[in-house]
Image (tube, rainbow over all chains, first blue to last red; front, side, top):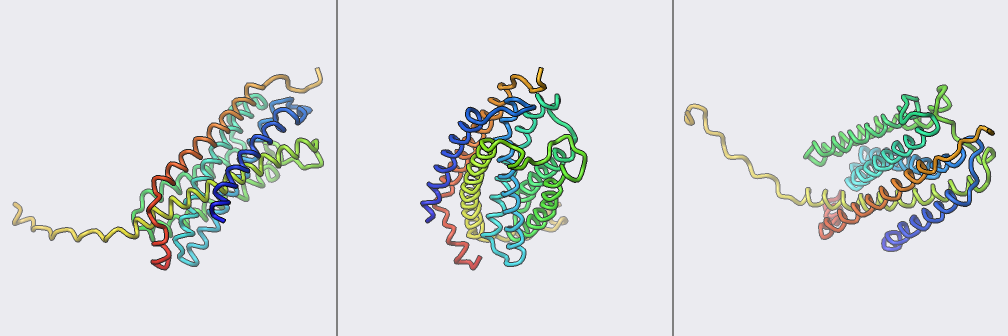
Length: 233
Length: 50
């Protein structure tokens, strides 16, 4: 099963990317307003969904750690947070490239963009926190709490285009788009999700092994008794 | 003039190029890290009841 997933996820992901690329770049018609520039949507939106999936996995794994104390869940949380940061950074870069020709700027402090940036920096901070804490138990607990707090941004990010008058367009529905546009988007999204799952599995394995190594290390030897200030003087 | 934006393929190619390159580089980095840590048995986690 493990070998099937290890091979199947990347193969299906890459095939999906190729087919999605052909559909999105060649087959799908141009947009009524944005012409061909809208084709960035086929990589921008899947990157957003992959990032949100990854940070949601971090949220769930963090809860599991807090309730069950499972270091396996902590490893999954670490892995999915890194994958979330990767797709989150990609999301912002792609959004910026799309914003330039359509809005005339690379960046705007629009609620959707701002909440996406907050999520990215919150999870980058989460990864930094993990590097600063040596004790595995303390690291897992602190970072689980940090992840849950950071994930409070997810529903705000998702709903921001409906809650506020936003420069960022709201989500399209299948009813408002050509069927080939929807198919291209779903195919690319499926490819990104498969790759995100593969990335999380690989990264979780690395985290588990590092943790196993840490736990196997002998406790540090007691420091030699300090000589008194007077005798050293 | 029908109000549709014209051109912009350079932005599209930049977006797709960055996406494919980023996915490939990240995948290679993960495979390399996975290979580097191979041999450090995660079963230890389960032996420790973790």
